[in-house]
Length: 148
Ligand code: ZN
Image 1: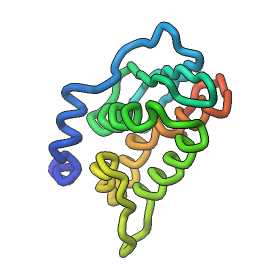
Image 2: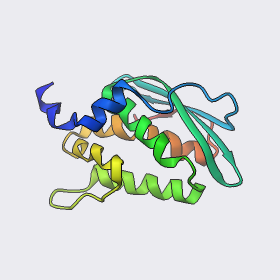
Image 3: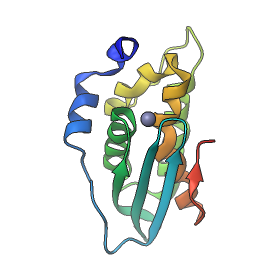
Image 4: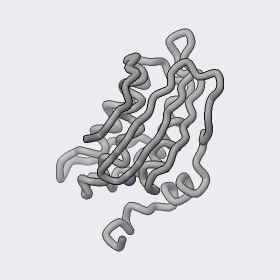
């Protein structure tokens, strides 16, 4: 696990130990599962969308520290966002974790804590699982999302 040490920033450790927005959302309008078979991460994303806005976002499930921290940070980040703004954030986050060498990562505030996964392709899927699930849920998809 040594190679992952630089990924385990304080922010990630904290959000893994104390995930924000963890648990079911009874009044959810959108519920979608996401799976990352490569690592074994499984999550269910709950969204309450009204008036073209993400009113609330929660998640539950089991996964590695990166996947849990990413879902915790993501649900915090998209709450209160319009649907286009949430979709834009998906694009920006995707760019953050997949930018090529020598390119400065975007500054996405707390989400930038996950920029380190760029160096570990298998970990990119852990970090983006919740985001792919979000994008599919916003698009009205109901089939579980898989990173494979
Ligand atoms: Zn994982």
